[in-house]
Image (tube, rainbow, N blue to C red):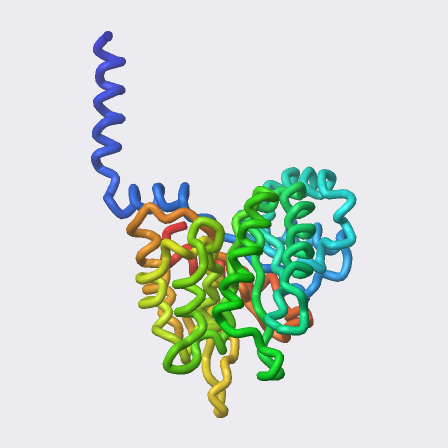
Length: 300
């Protein structure tokens, strides 16, 4: 090696050593943790496929790597799954997951729901999705409400069906699942199979009833593959009201801390609701604020 080449190599080594540990940690996190957006800021469901593609262009410009959307946004495109995948890939954005619904109701056959989600999962995987998200409806009739143990069994069945379609199944929590002395969420965590059921932890839906979102994240992040990142304030009646990230009651730094300081892989998906299910008046501005704030607190 000649003297000039030797000095170049030494200079590179000094530059690497001079990089702060925090910068190196941030670079590693960027390879593990990805930032996505739920499209419901633009309305739910998105009314047309052409409009969805316009939304994706906006998300890419705002710095998002992936998107999640209501399964109703893409159900009419099921027969054109490969074309959709090509359109998403051309925009350099990952289809994270369809967001579906489960009916925890004793009058609806679980097998029918499993097969419905299997169908959605099949064409969604062809479109490039890696996950399927489903949330359970709010109970309206206690007589028809499915016992939580039965809910766990249903989630296991859905998880197996999704795995057969090449997807990972993530269950999305709602507020009522953290209520009471023996909350449903504890049972669902304990009685679902971690090989086929993961969680999509919605931090806003867990406040203020459940454990502090940061505490829940620290304890259960290994079962969580997707976080719904949002912030909320409380109105005079104690109801959650969506607000800009960092302006509300949720300690988002605490939520993501265990992810940054581990080998966790997954998605932080912004769900910035304003007027749901109608479009927000200024969706681009809302999502820009969210992306900027996440970059500030995570380095990603």
